[in-house]
Image 1 (tube, rainbow, N blue to C red):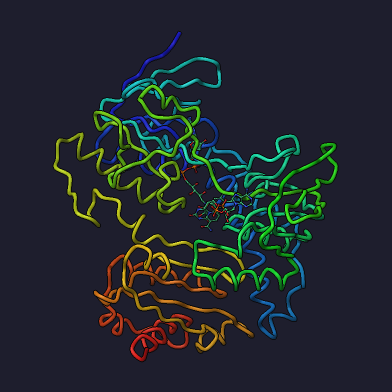
Image 2 (image 1 turned 90 degrees about the vertical axis):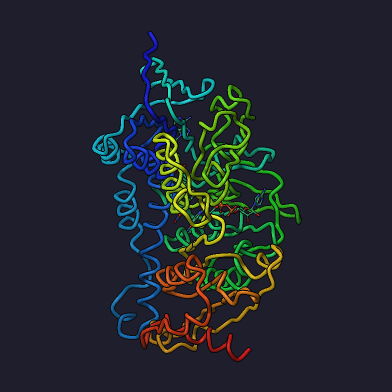
Length: 478
Ligand SMILES: Cc1cc2nc3c(=O)[nH]c(=O)nc-3n(C[C@H](O)[C@H](O)[C@H](O)COP(=O)(O)OP(=O)(O)OC[C@H]3O[C@@H](n4cnc5c(N)ncnc54)[C@H](O)[C@@H]3O)c2cc1C
Ligand SMILES: NC(=O)c1ccc[n+]([C@@H]2O[C@H](COP(=O)([O-])OP(=O)(O)OC[C@H]3O[C@@H](n4cnc5c(N)ncnc54)[C@H](O)[C@@H]3O)[C@@H](O)[C@H]2O)c1
């Protein structure tokens, strides 16, 4: 028999976004049920951020040691793949979610395991693993935080070929001899870096003109240089038109649109994401299954009567990053709490009830060697949005801190400044060790800092952060 329960808030999906949203709603005094169909912690914990960064970090550490005479002689030339994979397994909690499920319960939230679907306004029906059905009614809000899955192109032979997606690329137990990677985005470059470092011969097949097309062009150029130096073969302007694997353990053959074939032991399709909304009961509330969920700045889904349906994280397509999903979760949790208590919402940008940074100040670090880190729009994006901007660049290798950081340091920095307000809107750093530099830029962009004030934020000598001073000088002298 169906069980029925009523909560103030029902959250579907216990990834980083769902966990945080539930926690904030509970902190506002509301009762919350969280529905999860796989592992509490979501894609990020088991098949994305954590295992991918665990695969990449040993390579970065080794590459940095090898750029330092004295350290270079003390370390080997290659990684111990088995040890790297074992540490990766630890970071993915061996694909068990006991720890995170315990956190959910300890936070005062009710965890309902199973596949959730909307069942009309304010209702969620959950098919549980034991075959029963739980009907959840929300007094105030339902929040969809179901994330994304890998999007695969519709190619002849692909479905039968057993290709890698980001899930296999982050959880594989064996190092393939030859790995083909299709795509030129973040997953493609990070996983090409990781598996090359673990010993695979890697070929990157890029449909466009270069890597990391959403960043400043020099980011993709420097990352391509780094990949090539490690032995990754990169082919631009190449698409795969068919995939063939005659038997499960056999090599896979990719037919290329430019002519010819590529044979590999595994192929990773890193070709973007699709929302997990196809089997979510969206049709019961007048929305189209399979679509991204469009939201306003309070994370309320548009086009649904009654202001009860929210969507946060990857599934709303605003910024597909864990930290941005968690930011939206904090905003949406606060909105749901305020509405439930009958308190007024503060509609101002950068206020507690309006997601702003996930559009204006999105930071991202690509954990390749060199790292690529950016926040805010690129120069081109800012111009296309109608801003008049000044752009200044600086060669990161010219900073004393960079030279000390490693021999033959290569990198570049760019600052995009709004010409009318003389405030910083975007920053990109590419180079070893710049990932940890990015938050300085994020603070400056989110605070809409005037350039005149940045002169008083004096970077320590001799750190890579001195690039800030060099960028300001370049701006002054432009
Ligand atoms: C390889 C890779 C590396 C990445 N690295 C980074 C990184 O370094 N930094 C970063 O910021 N971002 C990174 N990302 C992006 C990051 O993983 C996502 O932005 C993040 O996981 C989104 O969180 P979410 O909670 O919105 O969704 P998810 O993490 O996808 O969680 C959604 C949850 O909902 C559950 N669910 C789905 N449908 C249902 C349903 N019907 N009923 C019940 N439960 C359901 C799922 O099982 C899942 O647990 C990476 C992505 C990939 C693919
Ligand atoms: N370090 C990080 O922050 C990190 C790491 C990994 C992923 N992520 C996030 O996860 C999301 C997914 O990453 P992703 O790399 O899968 O997606 P993406 O959208 O960044 O890149 C996909 C790439 O695949 C290409 N592509 C699409 N269809 C293709 C086809 N049929 N053939 C060949 N190429 C094709 C696109 O041109 C694009 O370059 C991103 O939004 C990213 O921000 C973040």
